[in-house]
Image (cartoon, rainbow, N blue to C red; front, side, top):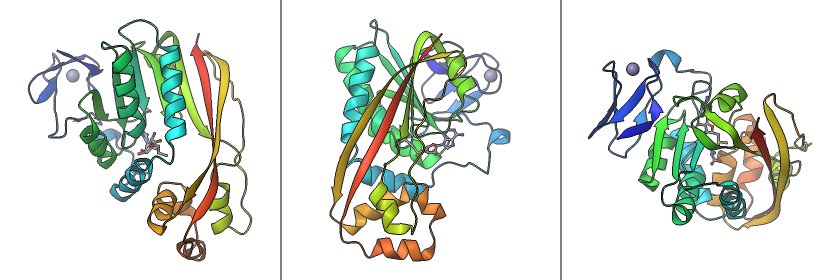
Length: 275
Ligand SMILES: C[S@@+](CC[C@H](N)C(=O)[O-])C[C@H]1O[C@@H](n2cnc3c(N)ncnc32)[C@H](O)[C@@H]1O
Ligand SMILES: [Zn+2]
């Protein structure tokens, strides 16, 4: 069976055998016990952005599995089903993290279209390992958005939830007329979390950025409040945000005193169509 990935060394297709993926030039990539493949060549590993650590991946799983961001998941499932055309529909989740959205979307899509396929990758090995444990329905790999190991024009939908932007590669791998779904934090996302740790919190900038080769369609807004009633979940949320790295010891200490947190969450789902 052919893999949805291509060889990261020579660009040829990868044939799936029992425990590995191989190209016609004999480059071979092991399939891990969990079921993912490592397609990041060592010389392309960028130590500046190694991706989420093991601890961050664990926090993300713990937080997301409690359903705090389920309204976003539901809206994404709805959007993907709405845009899905034809039986053999394909979705690529770029920077899929520990696979919460990927695995759930794959399941929903499969229920409606049994021939649909979902593929997801992230640069963080601990995240991909967790993702692969969630489901066997998705082809997961360790890879970078800046050098995506899939052929040109091979996907109908590309999903990016809070992950780095690599617009040239996204354009390359999407089919003509395919959709790029880009989820970004809106102005008031996690406002009360920020207010708890910073003296002067700032709102996120909201913008509809035009990208060459794409037409910007609608922006779907997901806004609600979450009530987090225990310290562990507050800490998990904190650890999966960029604030974790940027916050002073004083800010982190303030947060550790909170017994509960009621915060706004605000996502913008931008839908772009490849022209
Ligand atoms: C904020 S997390 C979002 C993860 C997931 N989409 C979610 O919403 O749960 C950002 C993700 O981007 C990944 N990442 C960072 N640099 C990357 C790169 N160059 N290529 C692929 N993934 C990358 C990180 O490892 C992390 O999993
Ligand atoms: Zn090869």
